[in-house]
Image (cartoon, rainbow, N blue to C red; front, side):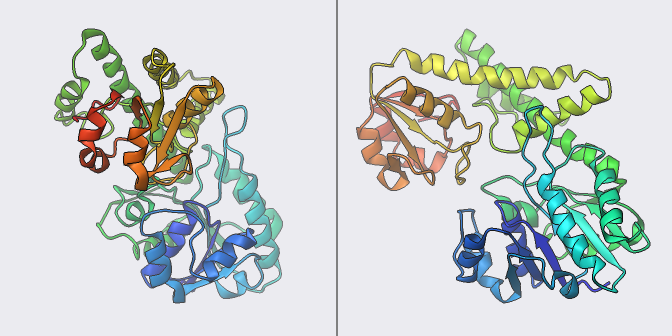
Length: 407
């Protein structure tokens, strides 16, 4: 199998950073996305959204990138196909795999037209445990090829966070790899080893084990977040600082200091979705994930508690500092700042938003003007550098400080 050039389907907020990361590390790669406008921008070395290092890596690795909106010649030019497309949650809390099925169908059409007989599908999109069975059946049915004779299937779910995607691809805590057999696992390991800078462990396992591991990982992290936030709720009742409590807990090796800080509920596209996925997976198996359902309930409660703190200032000019769900991203899905801002707008309150990337009344270039326009400021972003720079200005206002940042 030739891995000099590989292909990647899906150039979204995770797929495009992965593409340029490979390219920046001298891996020739074909990028496929059906969005013609996005491809046109990229061909002109312009990025369609902000992510740290994205512009730099696109320009540095541009000569290694071949951009397309169709699958024409993809199979002739490459034998390895990474699929990293969106798998949004459905109404029942599971994932929609439509875009994965569509990508596989297009690839299988081209595979059926060729005499080549050794291919590798690497799925990176997050899916429900057991999904690999349906995808392998689809590949065998639509391509006429047989698993482990003519093609391999490997699952390498992304373990990255928006705002640090490229750094996370290059410096992961671990790489989860589910493999259909050892041969194809070895090939996938060779490919991904090109971008890993920190000698992270590559944990190889069966396909079902890897699918369970991915969903379980995020569910466990959200459980820690909600636990820390509940400590914050308790601390509010005692009028004490939860950061001292969670800091102490973090020194215990059984807990660790990561994701154990009281603040706002988890948001974005991954944590809420994977939490629901763990609950639904358990239900299908006749199990009740009471601990994860409690995690979700606490998370929803935090939005109400934040609004309760703001409600008594409803007749004042209120500023929301941070509209995206975290700094350095434009994503507002399940964002505390966006939910609060939107609710205040609907109540016809005098409310202003300030964000580094999301377009609202003020951006980070006009923070001083934002502060001057408000009587009350809600710190939904814990951007310590910005807060330190303008701390004297912030001190002049009524602050609602869910992160308990020292100002």
